[in-house]
Image (cartoon, rainbow, N blue to C red; front, side, top):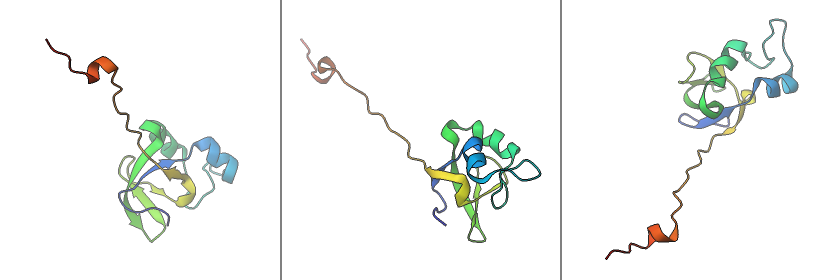
Amino acid sequence: MKYKVGNKVKIKTWEDMEKEFGTNHHGSIKVKCSFTKEMEIKIKNLNNRAVTISRIRDNELYNVKEVGNYNFTDAMIESLYIEKIYEPIFNRFEILDIRD
């Protein structure tokens, strides 16, 4: 297990997983527990495909709170999700408080 409860992770795209693992006879991605079209639809609607791990089951399955009762594995996760925090850019006149 690479990740722990509370980690925010980015789920791989359907296309990436299909290239890497192929599909089974049901049309799902061939990974442990399968990655289904239903899961892809829910993940695709999330900002940057990022989910938060809420529980770890059997020391190999991740549950996430954003998409319901689906299980994810390390093979389905692209990476930790790092949110970019942008600081405001001030111009030189905003930095200098020039008052009469």
